[in-house]
Structures are given as structure tokens and as C-alpha cells.
Amino acid sequence: MLTEDGKHLYVSSDEYHKLIEKLAIKVHQSGWEFDTILCLARGGMRPGDILSRIFDKPLAIMSTSSYRADSGTVQGHLDIARFITTPKGEIAGRVLLVDDLADTGSTLKAVVDQLKNNFEAIVELRTAVIWTKGVSAFAPDFSVDYLPTNPWIHQPFETYDKIRPAALLEKWKV
Image (cartoon, rainbow, N blue to C red; front, side, top):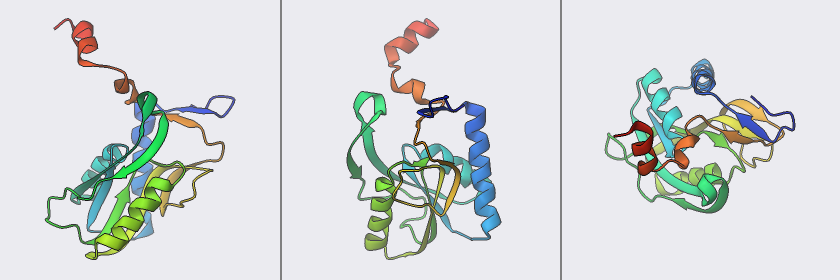
């Protein structure tokens, strides 16, 4: 649900999963065949996992981090892991790079550049996201929703950013 001022987008768990399914449909309808899904942790892990199951392709993981301050609401310095975790040795072939969104586009652009420059075994690389914001300087190959007003997206699992083990103990009286 987009707020009236266009500054916040609240996404329910059901809507989140529907959007991932729509992303799968877009990739499928393109006819592009790929060998591996590479998700960016953390935002791309949930979409990457679901796409990996739908397409029955191995899931590789690359860790990135830039939204750390204020419970993940302030973008800072971008850190990109040098290594990729993959079940098939080194990542190779045609790779679908998955993240949750193209916000400014800086993360996707930096990761694409790193992959092209440091992983010669990748012969083709395409990108897929749920949301692309109007301010994004990067245009993903596949995207479900274009958000021209650049709202802050409140994803259904973000409540865990502020919950700590002690709060869970209290909640569940364990």
C-alpha cells in the first residue's frame, strides 16, 4: 500500500510473494535461459531463494552491505564480498543476479562491474529486482514495479531489524 504522500510503500507478506512470482513470470516469458541464480545478501536472499526453487537452478550468494545505520534505513559505504558461495565450485555460465530493489542503483552497478571484471567464467549476466525506483541510475533487465516517487519500501520482514533475542523471550515467555 502506497501512502498518499508517495513517500512510503508498505508491502504485506502476501503481496511480497506475489511480486516475486510476477518477477519469475517476467524472466520466464523473456525466454532467456540461465545456469545459476546469484542473490545479493541480504535483500536478494528471499527473492533469490524463491526463484531458485521455481526455476530449479542452483542458488549462489554474494554478500553486500550499505544500509546499516538506523535499523537499515540509512545508506552508507558499500561493502561487497570478494567471494561467492555457490554449490557448484566457481560461478560460471549464464547468471541471473537477483536483488530486492534498484534504489540508487549503485549496489547493482558496482556488483555487475565486479562480476564482469573478476569472474571470467560468467559468460552472460542479467539482473532482476522486484522494484526499481525513479532515482535509480541502473536499469535492471527484469523488474516488476517502477516507483517514480522513490518511496521508502517497508518490507514485511523488517520488523526483525529491531527485535532482539530478549524481546523474543519476553514475547514467547520461554
